[in-house]
Length: 250
Image (cartoon, rainbow, N blue to C red; front, side, top):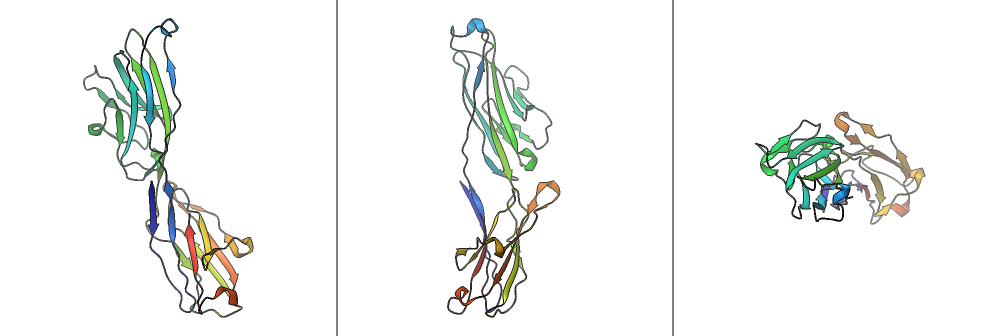
C-alpha cells in the first residue's frame, strides 16, 4: 500500500486559507486468468506443466523497479522456455539450453535488468508511463508433453506531482458580503489529480460554487487539473474571526 502527501501551502491574512494535496492509496491486488494447452492425445493421461500464478504489480511509480513473477510447476516436464510479452509483443525470454539463456527485445517502455531476471521473474528498470499495459507470461515444456501455460496481469505506472497545488486569486482580507474567487491548480501528474474544496472541514459540493476547468495534457502524457471556488462570504463561514478553506486531491 502506498500513500503520498504534500505539504500545506498557507496564505491570506485575515481569512486563513490553506491547501492540502493527498494522492490516492495504491493497493497492489493481482488477478490472473490461466489457460493451458496440450496435445489432445496427452490430455488426461499425464501430469504436466502447470502455471500456478503470475505476479504483476498493479501500480508502480515512474522511475521505480518493477519485478514481474511467473510461478509454475513442471510436474515432471522439462522446461523449454519462459517468454514475457507486453501487449502481445515479446520483450524477454529465458531458454535454459541456449547460451546465454536470456534474451531481451526492444519494446517501448521496457528496460530489462538481466542481473535480476531469470526463469522465474523479469525485472524492469526505471519504468515510465509507456511501461503501463498488460503483461503476459508464457511457459512451455519440452517433449513429450509440449504443454504450455500462460497468464497475464496489468500494471499502471503513476507520476506523482513534484510540488503542491497552486492557489491563486486570494485577497489579503475579506468582509461579509465579499465573494471568494479562488482557483487551485495541481502539479503535473498521471493520472490526473481529482480536486475538492473544503470550507471549515465541510466539503463544497454545490456546483454553483465550483468552476470546473478543462484538464491540460502536457507532453509525455502528464496532466494538470484545476478547480475554481466562487463563494459569497457570510457570518456562517467564520470561526473565531477566521475561515479555513482547504483544497484536497483524493
